[in-house]
Image 1 (cartoon, one colour):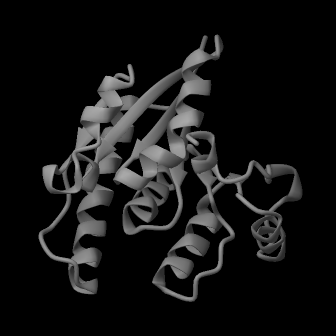
Image 2: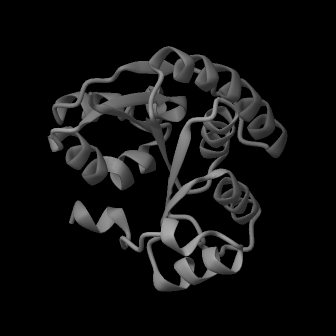
Length: 181
């Protein structure tokens, strides 16, 4: 039986960072790729990356809508709450073995919360980075919810270890955006 790996693409940047991972999952004979696409990734004003995903030969298994108009911290908090509701429903329907999430936005936090509360193994790409903004706090919260870590740099890997993450669950992979180049 194939392991179902659900990759969440909830912004344009997530697709660029997850594309090589998605290709590898799709090609692996023991894995089944599931794609959860939503948030700003579905919105025309942000380039509607779902069109690129389909053009690249990927099937979108579930879409979720949760973006609230505006860009204030209040609106981001509201969007995060809606995202938790929508992503939780999607994950219940898809029933993956692993959820893969990328970086540090509110959508990523919503994915991490949704997967964690449903006892689904969570893999986090690009944890351990330091920015000094709200993104850093969100990223570290996701780190504590994640079970498997794929940092981009040795510095980020060391920071994950300092945060108390199990060294055996940290895999230094480099920045996945480089794969596109």
